[in-house]
Length: 311
Image (cartoon, rainbow, N blue to C red; front, side, top):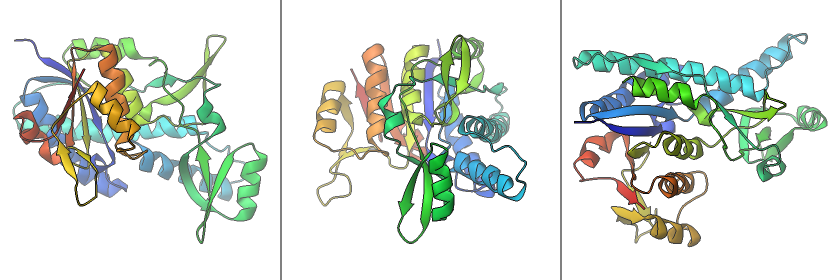
């Protein structure tokens, strides 16, 4: 029997807020991922990095403040650091969990770059807040460098970067080769390192990519059987958070689009997950998408939890 190929997208809940929290969180995450491996899935895993890349950016900015001759780290370098750091923790936790269950399988992390369009509208309307709180003086200095900042009343100013749409995954052939060799692959972490191709040279962009958007692109590019999005809720809901909240066990692409038009899904939370599902299914209409929580994976595999989206 052929294994079911799946891309798994991990949200913030899978990683925690701090280094110590992440060590604990990835152990639980590894359990859910191992459940999928035991259910005969061949996994390619991607993950969020918002908290991690922000932590790294803060640290590198403070280093620059203390040592003025130190070159500040651009966002693309911070993204690369976060991929290695998060991938390392997931990779080791999952390997240990699999070995504990008697499963010997290589888990590999690929440093992944994703091309973006330099003329993407997102560069003119940045939305992703990162880094430390700054004084008005520091914020003015950032503006003079050409960066965007946003004031949070009573707290200070923070830098804001663009979240452009992913175009192509540069290392897709390497990811595919490892996946086809039966390895568990961790790739496109944090949405991937955003790069712009100029005269065949890849140059890092001052941006971040929405990890759900790249999950949809990765699943479509690999032609996997399923896209599994693990988030903080057990399923998708209509009227989420209201008195008439209703679980949606299944959706078609058309129904998902209609709910998006109704404004049912909040930007930055469920909306990008639904958009990722649509991206994947429009290119792979025979596939399916499962949206559920880490703690509900076993029940979702039995059809007792989660939301399944099909073409």
